[in-house]
Image 1 (cartoon, rainbow, N blue to C red):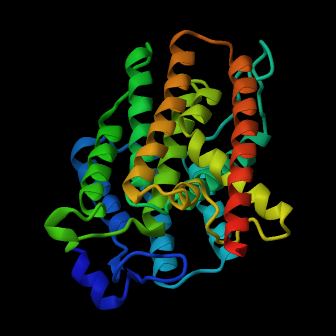
Image 2 (cartoon, one colour; image 1 turned 120 degrees about the vertical axis):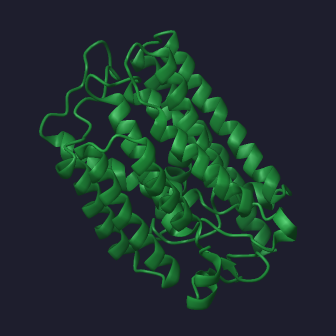
Length: 329
């Protein structure tokens, strides 16, 4: 339903140096997912004060993302908007990270007054991590579904009453989007992209769910387990930003040095790239889920993650250098 509107107003992704698809593709995946979530929520999800704040924050997120899709916004303006949207979650819904678990030993790390600022920073980080991951058909959708399913699995294993109607709505909406995103339906005639509105919506939704699931009486997993569940977007973003800063560029500068770019450069197709990264994401989530089920020490899982991140960074840096050398030849 949104495709004709997108085509008429120019809300489309055009091919270019960094965008190698064929033809103009409507950027309405995020808008469609948002519409599906909102409509289904009225019928299936309890409307408490927190959920109203979630819908308010996602409304602003999708609006800002759609404006960015239509007319590339300045990176600094996007950051300001993301901080304000994160503030709705923290100060409007009073939902924030007040403890990090026992990541440095047996004592739980309480953040105190710093927790609210820390949560806003986490919101901005997660939004941009998922936004930067969006470069291949189905990738952000697949990683998001993996995250929602992982939280659902942990909810089943926990002794806490956890309403999974919302995660079910999310999974259904994203699956529907991916059906059109892969472009196989009627030879790609109805192909659509998620756009910044969709990828940032997924990032905001994930951090909202994670914060709710790791804090307070309703907590069903530890904060370090949550990090494992979204390891791929986080590690990819931080590795790319570190390489950019080291090379003297802005960490917000757009470039083709993400994990999906490196895999495509090494000969994988778009679908193979998505499946490869999805498998990696599932493996990391599985590690986090097992650590939660078998009560592995959070401090051990923290050290394990840091070592994994260092290894990932070394491998990606070497792969990125190969791409740079190849481009010079």
